Structure formats: C-alpha cells, structure tokens
Length: 185
Image 1 (cartoon, rainbow, N blue to C red):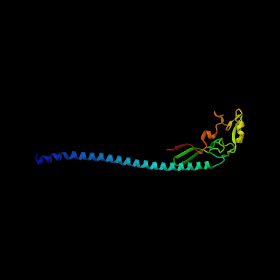
Image 2 (cartoon, rainbow, N blue to C red):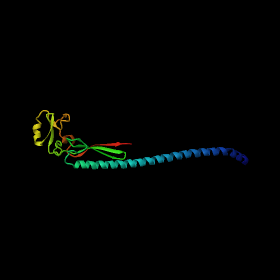
Image 3 (spheres, helix red, strand yellow):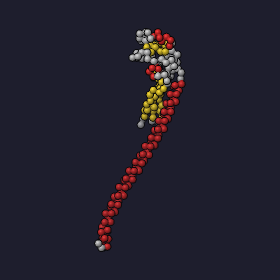
Image 4 (tube, rainbow, N blue to C red):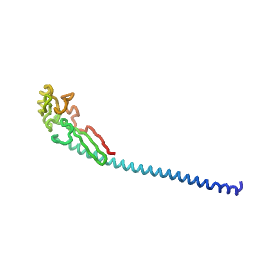
C-alpha cells in the first residue's frame, strides 16, 4: 500500500477509534463507580459492626454486674425480678443501644432444698395441698410421710416429683441458667 492510501484509511477509522475509546471509558467509569460504592458500603458495614459489638459488650458487662449483685444476696425477701422464689432463680435484663441481653441466674439455697422463708433457714412445703408452711429442715422428714405434702408453694401445681430439691433441679452451685440476645435491629 502506498502512504496516501494508508492515510486515507486511517482518517476513515479515526471516528470509529474515538467511539470505541469513549465506550471503553464509559464502561471503566461505571466499573470504578461500582467499586467505590461497594467500598463505601463495606466501610459502613464495618462501622455498624463495631458499634453493635461495643453495645453488646456494654450490655453483657451490665448483666454480669447485676448477676454478681444477685449472687451476693443472702435473703430473697422482697427482691425484684425473682421468677422462681423457691429455688432463687432471677431474670436479669440489660440494654445498651439496640442490644438487649436477658439472662436467668440461679442463687442456690443454702439449705439445699429451697429458700423457704427467704433466707434459707427454713424449707417451704405445701402442706396437704392447701397451705404453705415454712418448716425447719429437721421437720421435713415427718412431712415426707403426709399425703399431699410437697416441696414448694401451694400456688404452684403439684410437681411430678414432689420432693425434688432445688439442688437436684439446678445444682448446688450459683450460676447463669440461660442467656438471650434480643436485638432491635
């Protein structure tokens, strides 16, 4: 080919090359914009995760503090959040931001049976199915012989195992029984 033919061919292709170049620039710009959006979204998600983790840690710290206070008490009389007064099971709630944690914690009765009169010096027995008695542990043996007597309150239905102690149900060690995270996300 001669040089003039090459120049004429290049001149005709100049518009096509320009269009292809502009199209490639548009595609690359769209890809770059998509990458930038993705990076921004990831940054927001990391920030939200860090915020949620801080709120979770704060709520868990508050729950542990409340549980420690509950386990330090030696009388259950009049204590709020008591969900099982016979065995000393409490519900503990703590909230931080959108994170809420709920636990149940067991404060084992010192007598092994139940908290009785609230300080564990006596045992609560439902006597003949119609009234509660707080009796001395030594009198428990005679109540084992009475039909209709069982450990606990008459307000509760007679359990399947009427003489099952709190220590048999939950153990003899104070501890957390359950844990739930309740989020408002």
